[in-house]
Image (cartoon, rainbow, N blue to C red; front, top):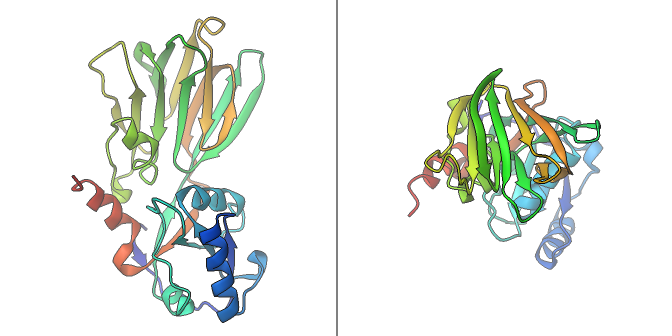
Length: 262
């Protein structure tokens, strides 16, 4: 459940850090004050960096099933807690627990190839050349947009709604809403279409028109498939990502508060 308080008995934690000087300095501080474990032996994995590194850490340890607690040593840090090298065990034991489910992308390219990837934030389709893409949009087998002429289009999770989706003028989605955002990127036709909110169990299919003249790539977080012919996206609820946040900075409150930020 989003923002649920779960009392944890944390005896061992691991720390992973980005290569930035701030993150490496933070790693040195923590290492000098705490006994660290390897990620596979730890109860919790602490990530030092920014939101990009947090996303990378979630993907790297996706199959471990262990909670991840981020501390901001990057720029934005929307998914991160404040950095402090002291009292980490105490903070982990009282942290709020958020569960996320990723999107599963199945992309078929123009040459008959097929590739799957998971996206914690969003799956985005982007034009590869100077010419706008032409994309058909279907939801649960029903054609909803026969021809979307655009720079691209994306499907975002609630956790990813404040990332690329927000930059594309998509809606911010509270974590507990069980909703996905379908957001066009610089749509030319239909010009007034601003996207849609979909139930979490919706299956979205994109078909690319005029593939040779107007090639499109599909990106699941940072896994890119070039020259796609069709892309299917749906939430994979069999995969669970566990994140930890300080009580005063839980993810659900952050997403809610972001809607009132000028």
